[in-house]
Length: 229
View (tube, rainbow, N blue to C red):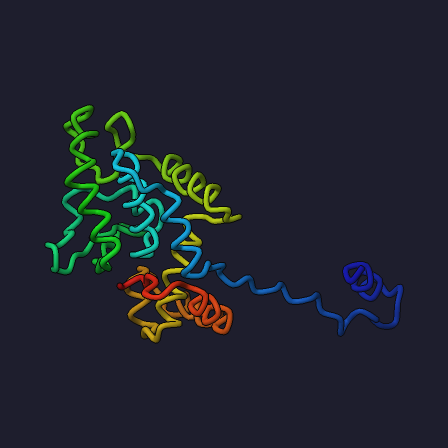
């Protein structure tokens, strides 16, 4: 309609453009979706508590996605040599390779360290003989590198068992950032952890419902996890 009025004015068919001061509505700004800490607990618990090799792998994968804010491509791209899981009391870290090949080192919290140590020591050795040449961290049932689609299926299955709707790998990344900022972390530190080229990209997380997140923290059980704990 606005184009029709402009055409009529340009062709001399109208004396003025009645839509000249009318502007289309601004596209709503979609904030990143995050889940609360209690839901993170439910999701990871739903990966299973048994001692089967793939159960250990699934728990470690979910702990890494939430505990480091890794993109799913970064997580499945990890090699064994990219992980320093630390000793029983020592700090650990992972080396992630992001967009443009930029590498960054992200510390591991206690939950992620414990899950990775259990996977590396008790589970991966039972899977890797099927493809001993691979140095990929996360393996599929045949011993090859776990694919993005395979990692998605791990998350989808855990979310379904936990009764959580619409959970995606990127939502865990959003949750990592939002929970850190809500806990008082500096936005530039979170920028480095996420591998954002610009702090402007990271600042959007400061707009995510702080009050709602505080409610989520309050609803979490005592001693609930935190990305860096």
